[in-house]
Image 1: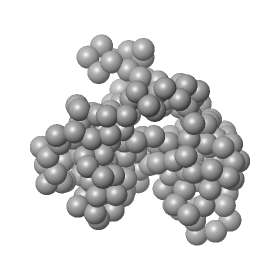
Image 2: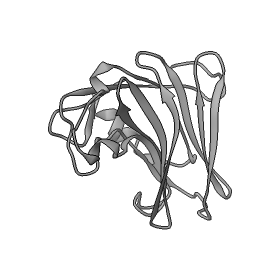
Image 3: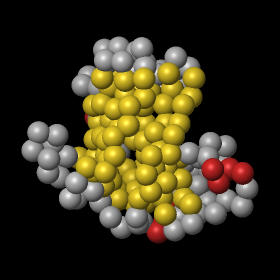
Length: 174
């Protein structure tokens, strides 16, 4: 499914708005997608805001500015820098994880485990990266978080991000 962040906006719009509406509550503490970025996600803001982390997707475990785990991203020249982006008891923590190539599918997943958020990145051939962020938060329920551009800047042009569901037990795109 394509998520489009329109010029001058922060929030994304999926091709089908029902995706955001009916896939809102998360009772599993897990979210994963096959993800692909294209050239539309490259930008140069010409200011210190270039290093702000945009949000790709994630899970809250309560209010998302209190406790949540998301993949974040930003453009750096012709590559996409993928990051972890978390709030733990109201404190924001982020870390650059790996560089992604445009036009290539990557399998990204976040799991809320006892004592940690687990971020996993794979390409179509192998596991590339795993990263744990410690938390004392237990997961009972939460809600899913969707693509969002910026901190204080809005999207400088339309951006398209593809997110395709996968079944974690069968490993294929659905």
